[in-house]
Length: 226
Image 1: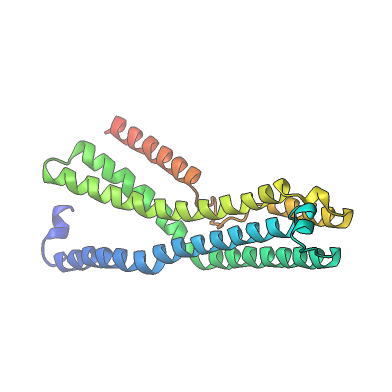
Image 2: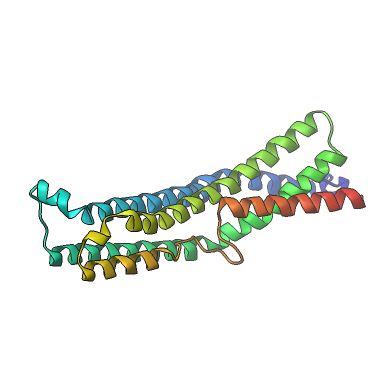
C-alpha cells in the first residue's frame, strides 16, 4: 500500500478494507463459488441420467424381444416426450442459474483478471524474499477460483453435447418413422448446447485460456512500458 494509507487517520479504514476482503473471499467461496460449482455438477448429472434413459428407450428391438420386454410405439413416443420435457426443464434451470449468478460471475472474472495481472507485475518488478511467496500463493488462489467456475461451466456444456451423441449412436434407426423423427428432433435440439450464460462469454476452460492469454498480454505490455 502507499505510505499515506498506512498512517493515521486513514490506516483504520485500510485495515478494515483488507480484513473485509479476506473474510468475504472465504464466505463467498462457500456461498457463491461452491454453490455455482455444485449446481453445475448437479445439472451435468441430470443430463447424464437423461442420456442413459434415452439409450434404454431406444434399445434394439431384437434385444427387447429376446428379453420379452416389448414396448409399443405409443409408449416409446410417450417416453421420448418425457425426455424432451425433462431436457427443457434442465435448460430452464440453467437459465435461472445464469440470471442469479450473472453479476457475481462477471465480477469474479473481471477482478480476477486484474488481480492476476497486477500480482504478476508486482512479483516481477517489486517483490523479493517472502513477498514473492505471498504473490505466488495469492495468484494461485485467484486462478483456482476462476478455474472452478470454468470447470462447472465446461461440465454442463460437455454433458449437453453428449446427449446428441448418445441419441445418434443409439438404435433409433430400427424403430418406426414416427419415432425416428422424434429422435432427430432431439438431436437437433441437443446441438444447441446448454451453457451458463454470462455477458460477453460463457464460463468454460477455453474461456479460462483466453483470460490467461489476455492477462499475459497485459503483463507483457506493462513490463515493457515500465
